[in-house]
Image (cartoon, rainbow over all chains, first blue to last red; front, side, top):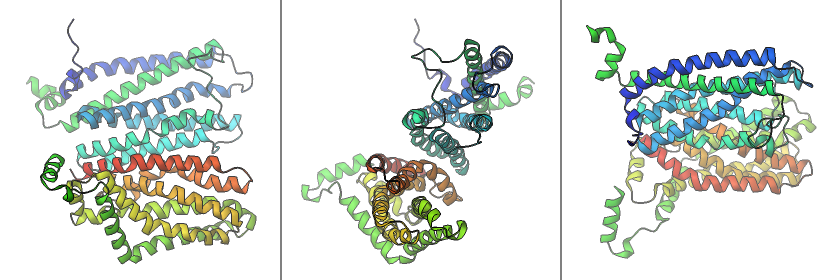
Amino acid sequence: MTRINLFHFAAPARFHALAGRLVPWFGSAAVVLAALGLYVGFFVAPSDAQQGEAYRIIYVHVPAAWMSMFVYLVMAVWAGVGLVFNARLASVMALALAPTGALMTFLALWTGALWGQPTWGTWWVWDARLTSELVLLFLYIGFMALHGAIDDPRRADRAAGLLALVGVVNLPIIYFSVQWWNTLHQGASVTLNKAPSMATPMLLGMLLMSLAAWAYCIAMGLARARVLLLERERHTEWARAALHPSAEAA
Amino acid sequence: MNTLATAADHAAPDAALPGLFDGLRAVFQRDLRIALRRRSDTLAALVFFVLVVSLFPLGVGPEPGLLRTMAPGVVWVAALLACTLPLSRLFADDHADGTLELLLLSPHPLALLVLGKVAAHWVAGVLPLVLVAPVLALQFGLPASAIGVLVASLLLGSPVLSLVGSLGAALTLGLRGGGVLMSLLVLPLLVPVLIFGAGAVQAHLAGLDVVGHFSLLGALLLLALLAAPAVTGAALRIALE
């Protein structure tokens, strides 16, 4: 058995080609899964006993909230790898994920507000989970703003990477906020160690939407990383070939 | 660079070896002396603090009950701003005249040198705010025992503001619009300090036990003392590469 070289795809040219092949797959998977998930969520799943039809926003809200935290974690891991191994590609991945994560955080907050108005009777409460999710949005924005403010891309990668690592302290606060504090936001309905407290079609819809969110984030992250790489490596041979395939052929 | 310096130290007689905290003490004394000679900077932060707190009764109206409820949060938010905003200048002067590069090249642990600078900033810039806070709290009609809790929470929490603020200052060193950007980076990280600091006073006003709030503030302080100087040092090295 040949040993798998983890750093094989750390070379920008190889990564660019690989990501180019992966993006359409993840992108179409996101579309198909989201269509299936929305169909199950809106037409198959029953309405909730207490919340009526308003609960259906969870098919967007819960996957977005999960991804908002998970994307930050992945971003911080890439930033850490970029700092420790001085790997350019890892820092590019971290930067590529930040806008997607910020979008997911914003979606989670927005859909949460839409759900809160009919259910809690208010758009917003200053409870621990909502506040810490808002702080997460500020952390994403801070990461992108710091990166944008530094002209030298390598210094920007490192400084923003350090900030991303420091911001990780917020993740457990968001995740455990509903347990640590007595919040208005409900606890988790889906956990790994006990049976979910919801009907099977609801769970199926949420699962499909979560997979769609995963596929979307991966596709967007890879697509954005390709663009960032091309921009940074525009002086190299392979980037020029990738940018002007016709000129290469002629 | 460090290995060279250590080798040179070993060649020298033992008496010439610098102690672990010599660098910290030297930086602390130097920064404190500079701060005392530029009193206008320190006073500006103090006046800013008093001014921001004084704006609230003008904005929300002089109703005593409302002011008493708001006082802990108002004083804490003003302290948060008055403590972190001047921090964007923490490394700027040293960066401009090259002192910072010498500090980075010195054989002393960078984290301790950073700690010395932060400690000097806290003593010169933040301690006066804490001392003025009781007067402001009186204006808001807080009872004496609550004022004691407020000062204690500020004493415990404000070093965290300085420590985390120093990280923001290092990350935004030499950038355009560094001050605003620094607030954007640092303020989200300081939300827990604000919650538990102001929460302690509010809990006391509500007749509840404040030990939990103080324990959490103390834990935040220990965490910041442990991690922030080293991370700030790393950020300084990135900034000066």
